[in-house]
Image (cartoon, rainbow, N blue to C red):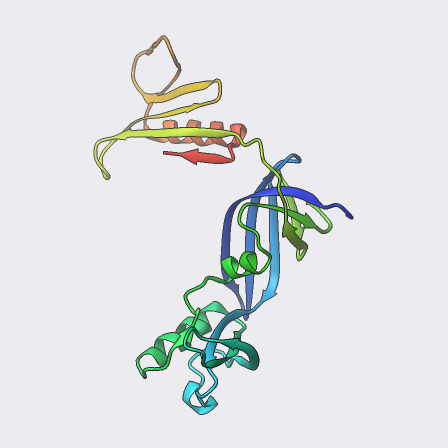
Length: 224
């Protein structure tokens, strides 16, 4: 696809899959939900050039070390450390911290670094081969670039009424553009003037009915 699909970022995550690092981004587009999957990424941080390889050791998977034309705020040169898994980076960082050795930018998540390097903070265009999945498009290992797309997103506000955090569930109310619905547990019919009321026999029926409605309505944003 030469022009790609214009998207607006909704969620981002990373996960270690076996010995590899995978990034997943969900986005809204004029073609519906888009899931972007990026495989075989590296977890990246930086270490002072004066730190010997022997001092770094191998506390997780062994990183690849590369000299870079970068410096700390104090002007000290640094090298890049590239790990196959984010877990290995975290294990190495924690072990070296106890020995007084700093790994710079080790707190930046790999999914955030991926977006930052492409100057993406909201809208982006994705170029790749889209695969039609169940109710969404999936594009694996595409090219991403910054874009100015403004998504027309479906939004709902959610309010849950219950008896504390561990007590009974009474109702779930949703409100959005042209939408006002209340799912409620009741033995008798309930009527209100400004909302549609869905009466459910018990908590299980309420949750099942609500999640079925949520899947069909398929909002991009849930506020609450």
